[in-house]
Amino acid sequence: MIGTLRREVLDHILILGKAHASQVLAEYQRHYNAHRPHRARDQLPPQVEEQPPPVDATASRRLLRSRVLGGLINEYRYAA
Image (cartoon, rainbow, N blue to C red; front, side, top):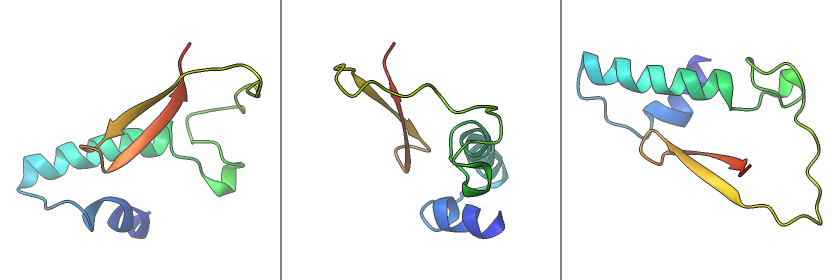
C-alpha cells in the first residue's frame, strides 16, 4: 500500500502541510476503496461485492469522467 500511495499520489503532489496531507490521503482512500480495481480481487474495488453487469456494446452510452485529486486520477462510469 505504501508503494502504491507513493507512486500514484505522493510522487505527483507537493504536500503543503498536515491539513493538506489529511485531505489528500482521505480523497485517495475513498478512490482506493470505492473505485480502483485490485488484481487480487478479480478487478473489484474493496467496497464492491460483485462485478457490474456487462455493457451492451451496441448501445450508445455516454461515458462520464470524474477527476480525483485535481485531475491526477480519473474515474470513469457510464451515465444512467
